[in-house]
Length: 465
Image (cartoon, rainbow, N blue to C red; front, side, top):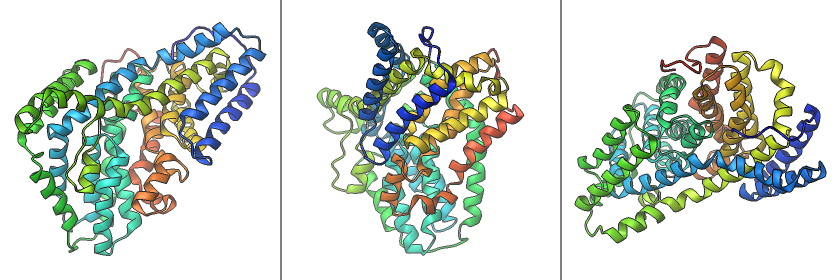
């Protein structure tokens, strides 16, 4: 977050007390009062305004702090709008439904936990939403698990691990876009760099789930077959539907800008939709891009899975992004954030300590606030300058934000994701936690890489890391 110099010089203790009160208040409101994050963040901004006025900071300077913080998130806002349109266009073109169908094809009675992990990972990448994946295909796997007489805790762990792998690695995911944009890293460079930590975590998790799986099992896979047949009957499964994905992949490999790449993915999907979907018109296309795709098949599971996307669906995360960054702008302008970093700066000049501190902060905010957006936003804003001073490329920071921010939220019983997953999967967070191998391995691997220096890129390095 690039801003003017802070207006106040605070002692680390005072900055810590202010931060504890502000974040503690937000945490209480989100976790115990159950309110949406937007309101407590606005109230926190009011408190910071009042603190600034008491310290005789002018209203103009405080307002500039707000706007400076928000400005750093405008790139993410534009990307979010394009992601919303991409999801809705890929739904109507059949791109995402085709991927879901292909993933469901591999489901059988052998190595059940490994397959549950693998399939949810593929579907999670296809739709870019861990919670939607868990609430649809995840429920299907839980039903099959019960029929097979297998462990619900392990199955839930496999579903959560796969869903958050997809959420973390999908270019459609809001957290993936947020982590890259908050530190000004190209989206596809960010995803490519994450493969160094995510790849080993995925492979190790797949092996463990394979070992834990029964060698052979038989059951009635009626629900899985029903979902596949419904997608096919609705006309959403077609090889032409893969063209937008191939175009997006090609442009990403060529490192074309995210806006152009996403635009190509949207336009190609819309063009295909005119050929594949009966009655698809310009009017429906315009409505689709803003309000999202609405499935009306009459099958609840399918409609829940496919009814997604549109610019409107991005308003919630965009609101959090702008408000949280505005709050971060005040934290910086009032000298609170610099004072906190000054208190630990003697420990941040070494790469291992910097990586570990970043991971620890992201994990801590997840447990304190129970909100993954804020763990990414606040941690990214706090450590961006430290990575610059250490001569490290910002993609190291964006990777740690996901390794220790995005995937930790479902492991917190009182977090947004933890509460949701417990509700839809019917398994307590504390019960599935030991089996979320991917989520547990990700922060450990990123810290090990920080200690060893493996794949840690310097600012001017051109080599992939």
